[in-house]
Image (cartoon, rainbow, N blue to C red; front, side, top):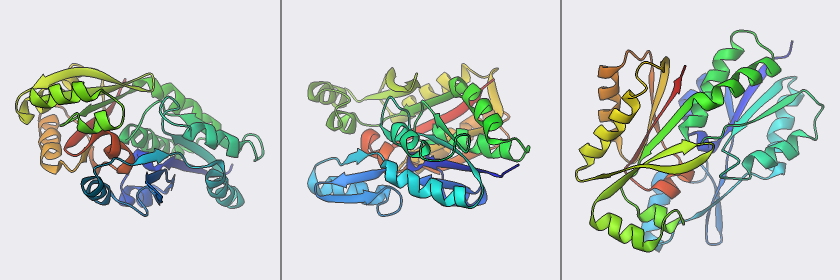
Amino acid sequence: MRNVQIITDSTSDLSLELLKTNNIDVVPLYVVFEEHTYKDGIEITTEDLYKKVNDTGELPKTSAPTPGDFHEVFKYHIEQNKDILYMGLSSQLSTTIQNAKIAASEFPEGRIEIIDSLNLSAGIGLLALKAVDLTKEGLNVQQIAAKIREQLPKVKTFFAVNTLEYLQKGGRCSSVQSFIGNMLKIRPILKLVDGKIILHQKTRGKREKTLNALIEEILKDKDLIDLDRMIVNHSLAPEDAVYLKEELEKALSIKEIVFLKAGCVISSHSGPQTVGVMYNVR
């Protein structure tokens, strides 16, 4: 039986250390500022992105890897006599999955499994780490893909957004909503549902109130949460993310809470001081 190579895209937000330790390969999305195009996480960092936004007053565009980008990565691993399991950014948010399927169709049937995560950011990362766990059980690529597909509706992804400005600039809410929201200090809690980002809850007032509302929301699943692994993710909000991590560790007997920094794609839509929590339910 051939070894299975796990591949994801750069929106999974897994750290270089985790990617290396778990032998996960990544196909980067693109970040576009006017005439300049950068590979997410390779040619531009989140800090670079925010600096460019501050300098220009404009948000970048993001674009999917091309079928050619996928073909190059897939070809390398196929030539290493590996089967491939790829999972990427929700098809409701990007053409990334579509382009991966186009590339996969150029290889022998059964060698590449493409999974639409119906998620984003470290929600994808959580699935990728689960796939790595399954490779260690000696399962083949089809068996792993089947188990991951069963897992898709069990992944919960929440984000607490500090400002509506980036959502407004990215077309996620109107300028009037953004103005009123910022005047009233409204901080949304967003949730992934069926591969789409929805407004789950509005909070007002101090930042701590928003974080506690997010914790309260997560603890509604207290008796259902898979305690093996949870992810706390942030975009230039390390103190808030540490607070979330510590409070969740107090409330739940989680074996591992993975602490990550959000990449350019999620940051370009959510803005600085965004925090996220991703976990599985049984």
